[in-house]
Length: 193
Image 1: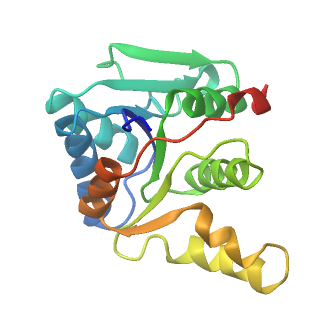
Image 2: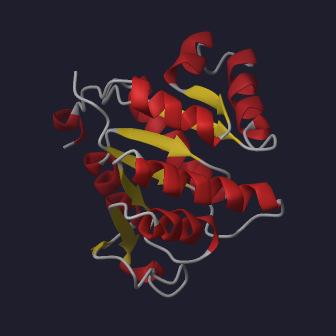
Image 3: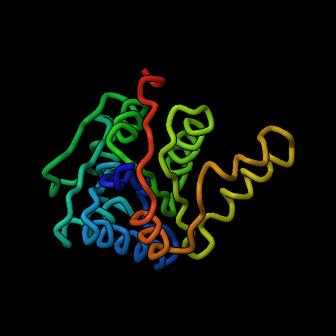
């Protein structure tokens, strides 16, 4: 199996209320750059999205942003990117990020981050891909998300093995270590077309 060379990072377009959130985004961007892993992200220059991209760029990393045209102003597209893909819809944004990434990392974020994370987990559940998915818990940021997954399992709407579709890591250092030691997997791309 091939090494992970590109990682899609899902994270907030706002900075969040805890200083550790921004610090985690900066550490992730720097760590990916130092590992020679290309960052794929939502293309904005604000919030945690901007922090992860700025840190990766400052460390000499490769960064590719993917942003829908209607969000160019709302999320303020990052002007420092050499590679920016502009899509027509949110769905095509997520599809393009999926196509470009060997793995996925979720940092703290809001509804958009949860949407992206749930969708990529669901695609894995449906066997449309087998790419690694990591939820980076920063100061308990993954707790509510995991509680929602557990509630679906407890209510009989999801199988208990749904928790095996992703891995929860304790902070950025653990995610970066897992990215170095986890092989890239198959994409199942034909199933999405």
